[in-house]
Image (cartoon, rainbow, N blue to C red; front, side, top):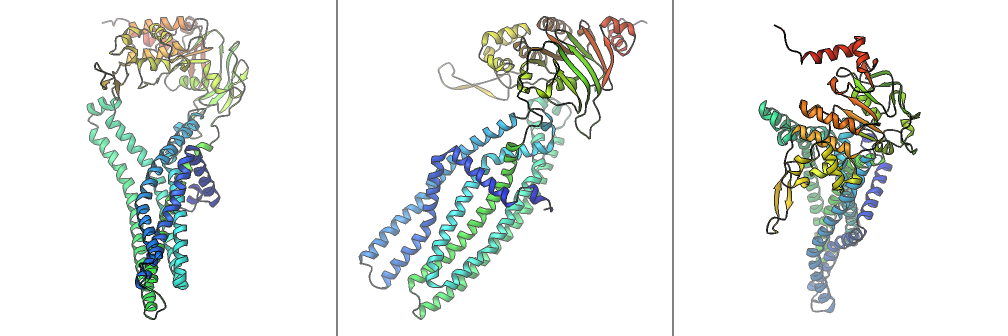
Length: 618
């Protein structure tokens, strides 16, 4: 590991202690009853080996002394039988409690993690590979990490109880050997801690490879990529990429496993040497009458028990450290502050308009400028269309309007108030958008529309009305289960069946144009918003459908503030103002007629498109 890795992985004692407290608090909150029962059961299990050894010594000494028929001997035998029953019963109960505790912790941890993810205001973090890697680790460790920490902590506690009991018993036979046995466990403890540290670092370093492996797997196994994968013959190529990432991860894991084998071998040798030397010493003492037969049995049990307990404690500590290091990703995401400033100021209805004032923007310091001092006004109640070549910044304007990002320099004003001073949730509640890269939700048809306004998710009349306005109602109503049909073939839908017997029915895959109309229906469900943004809303439609959709959209945005983006200039020619973007700034603005008469870039683009509909001469 590199010198700075300790800090990066959160190995500082204070941070580890904080993680332990957080894990315990999470477990107590998730399942307090199971947590208490698990703790009590762990202590009982820890004392069983010591009790068995002490009782065995009593029985052997009674037998050798001819007192087996005495009440003490009979009581010891009966108690030993009870201990034997508990040895078989307690671990099963603990396994049951541990499984339930881990499930409860995992559920609560996942809820908290994705609540934290949902608090991310913008989208920049979801474009950051480091954040995505940490999120994968957090999702994995958030569920099992706290449970592992609790399990390991109780394991260490049990080892302390077991070692304390055995050492106390061993001390009566040979104090010197008790000290030797304890000291022999220190190298084991250190070695296991180093292995745990190494495993955590390995998990951290291979996380990007695992995420890339999942990407290639999805390309091989999802319907979105299936057509191109088969058309271009990409199966072998993607499979080899997937396996290459898996080999990379496995090579790192194998190197760590080799170190673990060396440590385990050393532990076995150490245990054998200490047990052999101790046995020779105690046996010699028994010949001189210094020790009894029961002492020999007790000594053997103590030596082996202490070695096993220290080894278990070392492994538990190592596992706990590994879990805590990965748990650090979980707690880091929970503790992350907002990616964008969040103000509590409410957003009032748009009265005057929106103004971009000298807005500069780039996605990071390593990226080029997208907007360069953009000045743009979108008057309230008016329709403004944005036109420009690819990369001119049109979609970036939409992202800034929705406050997925903040300007690098300059300001965007909503009725004179900087968007950074408004509550982003309230701001977005006043905006209706059809994105160019709209989402295909693998939900039912009704839910696909209803997610546009969750308050109306169960309002079938409003959902149906939105679908009718988008021209998709007849298609959805004719599906096998109507609006309750799953719009995906990846998942089967449970159905009671004709005889009430549970069956599963497959969903359907709408066409691209139908999905686009569903996305438009989502926007129609968000009617009466202050701002309507349409980013290439008809890109996947044929000419007739495009004309119909734009007629419906014009009716929808009548009297509302609108931002229109389309490469098909005929679709936006009726906008109140057309703004041409080039090089990250405004180069032309005006109505369709004035811009055509001006003979600038807009006129050139419009002429190029119009020429495609003119008959060729020859």
